[in-house]
Length: 468
Image (cartoon, rainbow, N blue to C red; front, side, top):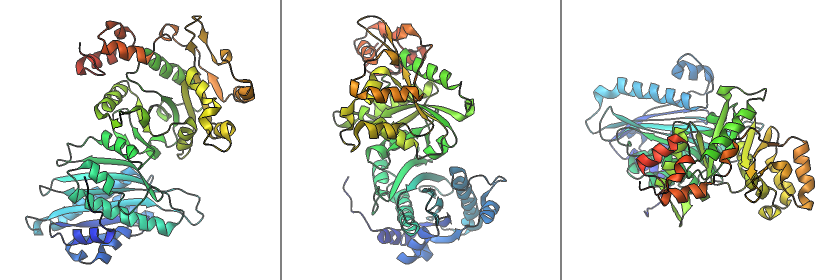
């Protein structure tokens, strides 16, 4: 859908001149850049009931905390701000407002660059707003990563983003795709990444937040998006904060007994780690966007089917645009996680050591290895079945080119690659391509190759071409 991209000032002015929109702007941490944009546009008296900047943490706790201070730049604090300000707006002004007036509250809690520039700028922004019925509010929550290397520039970006968000809530709520695209009006990904968007409310209940997340990746607004085991879109900083992560890449179309065994054996191996605790260790199934694109289009239904199956088996899901594993590892390096384990089979590991995949790096394979194995990172390697001999191949059985052998020995001797043992050997002969082919040809042999839950779900929902 083609549209004119308005300047930030014109968007703010359009909202100010709309007599139906009225509310509060509350900001923490990044100044009052969003409120400033509306005041500078002119006519703000018709839009803004109150602005507030609870910059001091004690004041922030006094106004918004329910007894625990905790982290300030987090989703919980944003929700506390929206709750408190919307309640006050209703309590103070509801009896006075005209029938056509729609209340809104905009809030943000943001960390910009400090004086030493040794932190990462990021923040939460949210709008609670009425559209069709007074007193019945919708809500949009956004998390952003601020990329500029200057606090003043980050504040300008925040102001633009806040105006874009409020404008989109009132003028683009009927088109989620347009809504997302408009958030980056007059901005670029060099300045800001939008790492999470979540919509809810009576006027937005038609929106599937999982598809919004995939659109963020597809549109280049963020390199990856997280879904927790319940299918909810989550912000990666919160998901991975002080957590261990075990990441398995695959197509999962569908997940087979082999994939299930890889998850099981990798988790069992990591349980031996002294830092392991059930509540601080996440298993994550990663699907690259390349596997979701077929014939140039995103197969949304196919994507949801895969996420549903993985969630049904208790798995968290990551959708990314990473082709190379070193980019995946680098992405996790953004967050304050504890240990990272990348899980893969021998065929994939052989490709990891293939020099031809790193022609784009000045340092080639050596540079890639350096990026793939930072501190607290290891690769877990699942064995494979040699179909010619019927023997199981572990990493000690693979053939490595002579000019790469020294790298392989270095990784093995320093325990950076770990061979998974205790696998279920009878499942090694299963391949996902064969399972998919059997499903689509209505050959019942596939039912013995995937977990029972997956069989039941595929049959009930007729997934992956199953006709029954």
